Length: 431
Image 1 (cartoon, helix red, strand yellow):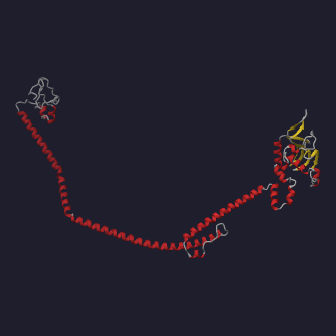
Image 2 (image 1 turned 180 degrees about the vertical axis):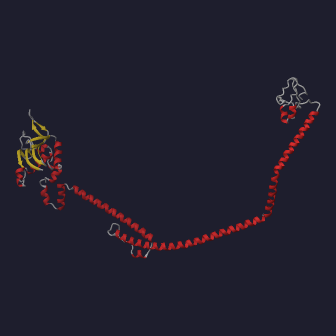
Image 3 (image 1 turned 90 degrees about the vertical axis):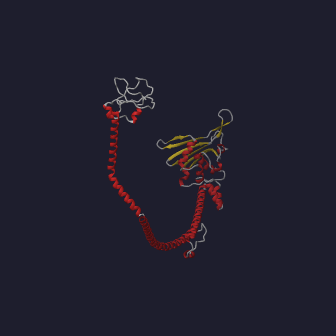
């Protein structure tokens, strides 16, 4: 940023309009702003800050009434015009604070609202072009172009009057406090506090890690037991958090590990020897077990042989019966055939006897030849053709194809013989 011209009217101690040409002042590269107290040196810086941000720095910040000069004519408005170059743009900022002015009609005063105007210089047409009249838009544009807020600009660019002299005469603590106030070193204090917190947290983690390391070392010592190496190199006596504790514990752990490995190798060698002896004993035990099993089987076989010898006579008797049964089984079909033939012969004999009886009985008429061939009715057939004791004459059922028919009801009487002679019933009564 580079300032070109500043015009103030009725601002601060300046009752009239004052012009400051910064281009002419900075021609030599450096200029000094000096004068007696109350001459308006600080007011020039206030006017620059007010032109840029619409506010004055520090404790002098207030309303527009405090910025207006008490020596100004009532009809002269308070105004600050600042021309500057930011980057490659030449800007002109005009600001008027809220201020009283006489009424145009009648008596009394009225308040005039604050006004702002931002213009940019057009090098092609060599004229000024208005950009904005909004306080917020102008403030955001200036803050974006400068990259600093009003507070940052006042702390970095403008050193308030009186604070710098007090800084030169102050001792170290007061100077640090004053520098913190001038340059807002709170962020550095916050960084320092953050680093201190990180240091304390890291210290707590280190102490916690050392405590866990010592606990593991004590557990290792209990597991390792007593040995010449560990007695010669005991655990370090340093407390948790002290430097060198981890290295001492690691050294002791390396010695304990070496001793444990040596004892492990010795134990592994002893284990291999014991396993060999155990394997030999196992093979001998297996051989003895197999021999005992064979002896038990031999004894069982001898006992079974003795039992079979005692049951030899019974076995021979049963064998003889089996041979006889097999011999009998060979002639069983012939015996069955003989029985069948005998039954047939007996049946024929009975048939001939029945025929002879039928032909010699005078009370029975001759049966038809077909009936004689068929033979007398069987017991089951006779049951189906019972006589009815009180049946009326002429009501007897007619014989069927077999010559006999069942009657409903019965009296347990004897059987009668039927003969069909023109539909008339002949022969004895039903009972």
